Length: 260
Image 1 (cartoon, one colour):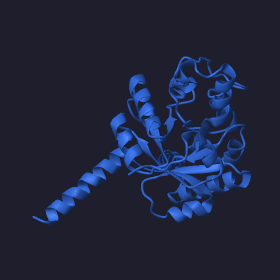
Image 2 (image 1 turned 90 degrees about the horizontal axis):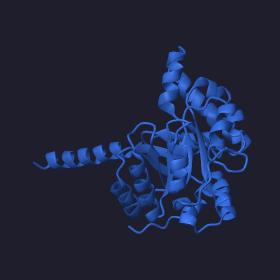
Image 3 (image 1 turned 60 degrees about the vertical axis):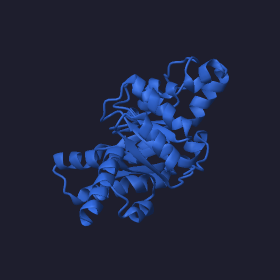
Image 4 (image 1 turned 30 degrees about the vertical axis):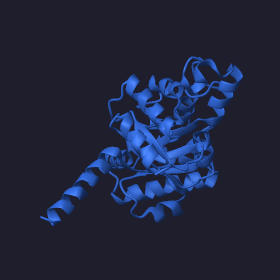
């Protein structure tokens, strides 16, 4: 399959325009699997999950390069807003950064500041892939970084839900993303009911919709996708490379067993 994806530098614009976009989490740290996805599917983007996997610097850069080689937008979810991988990911040419566990606008502002030169704290250099190894001028690179990088924050607790509208209106937050697993655990820890999870998810979607900020969510499958779209969600990370691999193998095994 030959991909007809838009240019990767337009990824942030597509998110801001609330285009319906589909991605998956990549947890295997394997660049070849990303190349296969990029060249044989029309997936919109992948998210390298540095929060729950064991990427090294070399693996991170190899995976970003693999995605870029086939015009596949690549977002990096770091472990925290203090992660050294924020700078490494952006230097390597990532399309965006996703910050987990953001509970309020101050945390969001601090996290976003790590990605910006103007009104931010991002360290400057031109000697890396994102700056075309010095081919870009200082002005060109600063403009590209500050204007084209997607900045996403995850809401994963009740406090974040309560402050969702303020988080969504924090300067340069492009995408508010719900992590249902962590949010569900946080609600249980707070003696919440199981039904509270969907109510809280809906509140994030509605809050983002009210202020015009894109909203995204992780889902294990595409079941009931229309309900989340109606709530205002437009960016979907559905499943992981590990789960998709296991499902594919199990499907093959089931077909094999049926015929013997």
